[in-house]
Length: 226
Image (tube, rainbow, N blue to C red; front, top):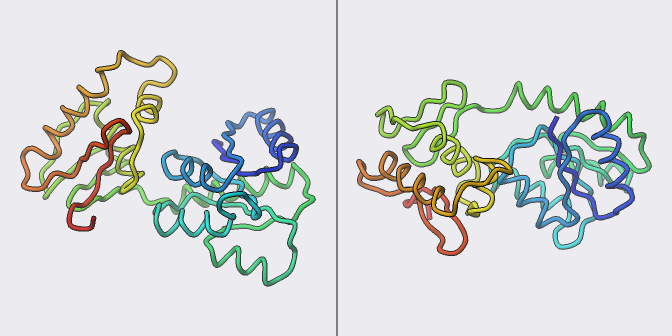
């Protein structure tokens, strides 16, 4: 599983990360709510471990924004020292899928995450939509206004990253890492592929969906909704 741990207690985060990585999972970290929300929106995780008490933005708000604004259904296991029924209900109402009170057993965390990840994969929608643009993640087909678009594998990866994050901006660095991993290309490669993507997605149609945020990155957004 690829897991995001959002926890400001370094000892807890380290213990969780070490245990999960030793068990063969990939773990990303965030020590505050704002960073955690950003990572959760622009990346694909099988599950998220989310602390309730976080600096910058608490876990309840992170979860709400992830569901409502980020439109992500990644399973969330919320961690907290609060064990009242009211606190648990607040967590579920914010969009959390499961709730675990500190202190906890690491084995139980992994077991709960595995269950959530299986449920998430079964329920996760495989269709991305922005305005009249539709990307089927199962068939890897992209349509706009019912017309099948021809995209190469690199353009498809970029489009998927932009559509998953929409309407948020995805930085150049994040796109490059998503597409090429650690073997980053020369500085013009991403620009060239974005140009080709625009030629397929925007140029034949009346409204452009792909926007540039100069010095930052790119986003794809419905112009009628912005």
